[in-house]
Structure formats: C-alpha cells, structure tokens
Length: 200
Image 1: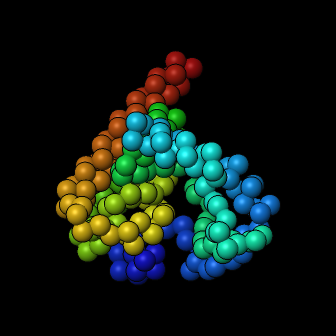
Image 2 (image 1 turned 135 degrees about the vertical axis):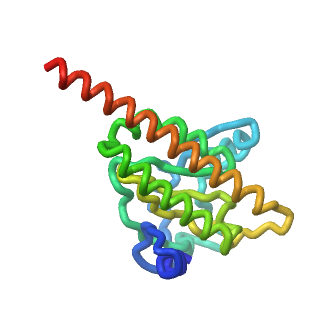
C-alpha cells in the first residue's frame, strides 16, 4: 500500500521495506509490553486498555513454548518536530493535545499552509480511490506542512457496515481544522516574535 500511494499519488510515508515475520522471545515480549500504552482513555476504551495493560499487548499462543511469530515493519524515524495526526477512534485528541507545542516550531507559516493544502487535496484523492484508509487514518505532519503516512494496515480490516464516505469527510474535515489551527497559532507566534525584535 505504501508503494501504491507513493507511485500513484506521490504521497510520502515512513516505511523502509515490506514487512516480514520474525520470532519474538519472552524477554523481548516483556520489554515491548512494558512500553505499550493507550494514551487516550475514554469510557469506550477503558476496558480494552485495562485488559491489555494487565495481560500484556503481546501474549504467547497456547502452543508456544518460548517464542512467538510476529510481523515486523521497519520504519523511518518521524521528522522532528512533528505532529501526530489521527482522525479515527479517539486518537484525534492526541493531535489536538500536541498542537499547541507543535505550532511554534513552524517558521514559515505561508509555506506550511501551501503544502498542507496540497496534502489535503492529495489525501482527498487517495481516499477517493482507497476509502478504507479513512478507517483509523494516521500520519505525521512536519513543520513544512508535509504529511507522512503510517499504520497503513487498517484498510485490511474492512468492515462492510462502515460508512467510509462519511469517515472520509470527517477525516478531511479534521485535517482542514488542524491546518487552520496550526497556521493561526504559527502566525500568532510569528507576530509576537516580530514585536519582540522591533522593541530590541
């Protein structure tokens, strides 16, 4: 999917190579389980979070003795600083919580806005062809307004009962909202900085 988005839409992503299967030892499993967290907890997700925090995100199969076969996906490190963007489930609250800290790092608000508009139009075209990607859509946005796709496996969980047209509209609407809020905050910071320099 990442190659498809790159080749057909000139979209950016953080995937380095196709996924592969590997053995996970008990030691590695314990280390990863200690790092796993569900940052947004609502009434809908609390039971789920409590369960996997208790039992561990990774668990051995009944027939396993000391290893578990898991898929491994190598990724590039996300640009820094960057804003985590998500429009599915309750993850959008993470985006909004990070926005105030992210926006002051945008040094060219006009260029950021121009690139974001291009990314919004690109995502609209992508979701027009691949509507299931709107389900649990996730990406990173850098300070130049570039959008990097991640977690593209969500489309494999296609649910015929979901209204992907509605989800597409919600996702694009939220991206426009994030663009607008980031741009306004970046402009506000720029004006304040210009005022401080003029006083000097």
